[in-house]
Image (cartoon, rainbow, N blue to C red; front, side, top):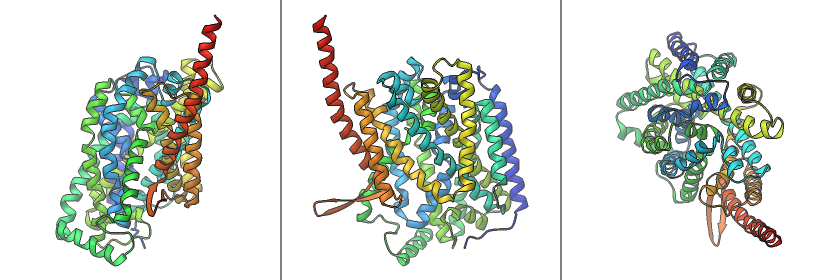
Length: 500
């Protein structure tokens, strides 16, 4: 059973104080780097003017979320070394960002593209492929926002407060200042969030091991625990887990910056060089993530027993830290939910307005109405995620987020490959996207929404991330159909020239 405390008044007071500070910053942000917030590029991309430091905090803030702080230690607590796949994932992703994203930024800046679907529309054309990219981004984002709510819900529960009312109040405040300040609000709050998280982690890795007999005793306790538990758990990865671990890391890395919130963080940067500098500096967060993951082993050594692994971090802090610092930690994690949730809702709103509402429903909409539509849709997205958590079991959000990762990976060829080749056609990429979505969804459902499928090749069995399998299908179909449709287009062009 989880060790659920009574209301901790000291911790709650500290938590509320920091939450109020963040709320004030959210509203002040409208005046920071002032721009015309009736224009979508100002509201949804902060005027594309964020420098290296702001972008570093912003991208880090939307990539390392509250659910990261809760879920990664929970996974390590449950399965051991396998839970560390997030480490190579974040190591792989930054060279990708350094190589690819400055090129994407330059195209989008030059042609005023605000979303990935804008880029696809402008560079590849077609009507349905950009819509498919937009719909994929929006659907994949909704459960991701819901997971931020779950992270906040877990820490509020750890302070002894049950029920949804605190969650509703927090996200109502978030909705109001995001509506009024746009991307400037999470950009400003990200400074506070990241500094607080670093303080929490540094305190944890300094204080907790000293109370548990040092790191040697900590890893020994974890090894003993997993040996007794048996199965596929342990502090060393088992050979049967190698391909699953590697493909989860690779697939997650390729998908990471396809999400609307991370794409928004990149496109809000002031220059392509800013994106490169951030790709160099962002691995500092990988170090932070590794230290966060070790909290799972610390919980085992501390004798933490919970009915839900998601409660591991709050219960660990309650057990080993004084009340005032527990409140600080809870505030840091809760604010780590607000920043990405705000950016996610803005990214989804940009997609809806630019790539669904404007081209399909209101092609002559004015820039002011376009921005207002995005603001309103950002409220709808937040309300939908909140309703999701209140009405449906938490597990649905987790399962759908796993599916969301499989889905968002299927826009990779349309967004990335087309930066380097014009041989892929809109028809080919749309066909690839469709077969990738169908394959990934079908495999995930057949596995009970688990992310790993056992591939049988010859006499060997290779557990592989479903998203990677679906992406391979996507690429093969995209290339094959593009070869056919490219040939027809060229023939048509030649025929036209000959007639003339």
